[in-house]
Length: 196
Image (cartoon, rainbow, N blue to C red; front, side, top):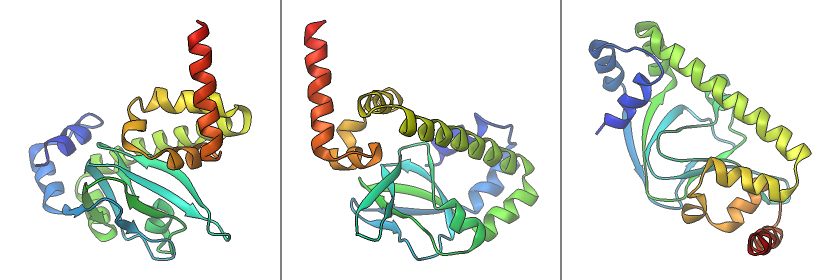
């Protein structure tokens, strides 16, 4: 059951069998049906989770009730409101399962205990957080400097099969445009491809 998770950790750092057994002893496994809210904004996010199967979206709801997708998570990704998890303050974001999803959870106390017992796990999370920060910075620059068509291309390059798993209105929200604008972007791309 934990094969992918073990490969995920071992692809980043060296972890002995005994250390892996300790880590696995602290995992909580939860299954969520499609459309289930896993984390609700305003509540404290008390865990970090590894997505073993499925797809999630993390989103922010503004004062007018409009949802803004911050990121999507797929198999072999981590999810959670990291700010809420670290500070113990209410989450700014909600997280929803877009498919039936299986997540391996670690609560904060277990994570801290594991960091003290398995220093390589803390190193693995440092590498993970660094990668997430790099992605966030690249996305921020793209949002400020690229048009919708370029951002859409970049999204498809990063996640080639995303359109098969995520509804168009969520993709549009992630790109910061309306679903109608995304339809126009797709139409423009098709027309350009026909000319070539």
